[in-house]
Amino acid sequence: MLLTILLILKFIWFSHLINVEYNRIPIILISTLISMFILTLIYRSDSQKKNRNALIFYISISIIMLIDAAYYSHFNSLPNILVIKQIKQLPAVVDSIRKIIGLKILAFVLDIPLVIYYINRYDYKPILNDRLRRLAPTIVGVLIFIIMLSLNRKGGFLSVKAQELYTYHAADIVETIIGKRVAVEEVELTEADIEDLKSRARLKEGKLTGLGRGKNLIVIQVEALQNFVINLKYMGQEVTPNLNRLVNHNSSVYYNNYFQLLGRGNTSDAEFVTHNSLYPSMEEPTYEQYQDNTFYGLPWLLRDNGYTAWAFHGYKKDFWNREKAYINQGFQRFISEEDYEFDEVIGFGIRDEDFFDQTIDYLKELDQVDENPFYAFIITLTSHTPFEMPEDYHELDIREEHMDNMIGDYLQAIHYTDKQIGKFIDNLKKEGLYEDTVIALYGDHFAISTTQEEAGLMKDIIGEEYDFDHMMNVPLVIHIPGEDINETITTVGSQLDFYPTIMNIMGYDNTKGLVFGRDLTNYKGRNVVASQTYMLKGSFIDEDVVFEISRDGIFEHSRAIDRHTRKPLDVEQFRKKSEAITKEIDMSNYILKTDFLKGGK
Ligand code: GP9
Ligand code: MN
Image 1 (cartoon, rainbow, N blue to C red):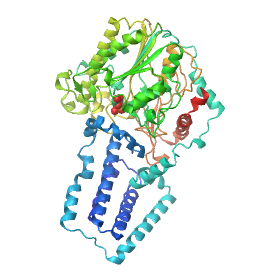
Image 2: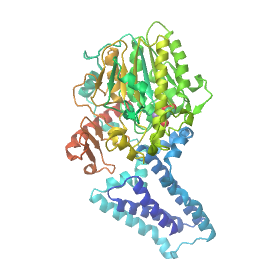
Image 3: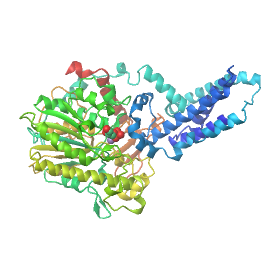
Image 4: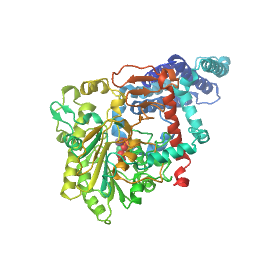
């Protein structure tokens, strides 16, 4: 009885933390009844250790809720069973997790010592008599069945499956085992679709076409660089003076309506999507799941045009499975943590300063490989959540209300990284590597989530309620030396669009790949950002709208706002578009699942 009451309290709290808006009472009721069903089964058994078994069950469920709630608070969705495979990466992110797991989430396990103590001390005995005890599971089971049935009639089962603890995980495990999540046979990829994807890959004459031809290419993926810091004046200070200089440079094009597009692999998906113009997997990190697939992304296309392609990142080479995945991504060499020397560690690892300084030496080596140009893909690290840097590195004055929270810490961290990027560009100039090199730079993903408490404080900085179109907005800037091209391109796009966009500038025709994105410099249609994380699959951002599909699976419960007026919109008008987006993602998944390029390339 005690355990049941505690579980009910936890289910109520859980449904609050994971934002259950509709059918909350039936969902809590079902969770309670399923728990009772299991508990009554335990107490009906002949085991001598009924109390111990009940405790084990209670503790397990509490821990699952803790993990789910922690995951949700960061990713805004519930985890799937395959995240278990990522457990080896846990030690690296303890700092970030520590920041996420506040008292609100710890509450799920705080009572456990007391409960153990209580049950042992009072030699806890169940309250039901023998006969009732034997009947109890059946009674509860029938109740569950009736409630599920009646909910199903009213169309409410979808929301149970999407948000009720047991049903969600059970359905997820079943779907994973039978591999049906993207039922390959259900996806239609017609000849016309393939032709369309091929034509998106092809080079078309237009603005900026071929200006980078024959030049080196350096792409810098900056950890947690959001767009709101670009050109931001904070208490009279420029937060990112060096990036601002790059963005406003005569020879740069700035894409300010550009967004992250991640799956289960976070930073590594930003890389994957950027290079391949395919959607990331929502089952496992794409680099893990499709390590052995055939790809024809940016490194491959450049290699086919004589380039040598290296990747640089100052962290462990097996993190996100980079080392193995990079082979089929097309990188010929991966300079990772073990190739750098450093004494001081900040947060995740190497300081951006040490990283960039030594990367210059490796770039010189890369430049010497042959007389052809090179491609260098550089991933920074220091501005990683939770953004805590030693005091010595704090150079900005921070407002009282941003002190000791993520906003103040983030501004300091991104200011530091900006400084290192400035120094790196200076060093490229010194080494004679600047004049002949196209530099593209973008953020991998958000720093401040809409679900964090600090989101409330963002309104002051950006001038309106902080929503997904602010959170997921990262800058993209492309610098082509010697060109007089400065412009801000406002076309909506995401990392999915990077490959065709950069290829237009580099001027190489892609005749072998399939591309889902668009060349943002020249595309005149209505482009769309089809997010699957933070906003679930079927959601989108376009020029005018943020459409967030409901979490409970019932379309009418979705949310849409006008991006200009910030006012709510009727969601029904977006049903078709949402379906079309889902179809595109399914086609991309089909290409990954069937290793389509292996046959087609
Ligand atoms: C680690 C770095 C961070 O190598 O790329 O990954 P993240 O935690 O941001 O996904
Ligand atoms: Mn990252």
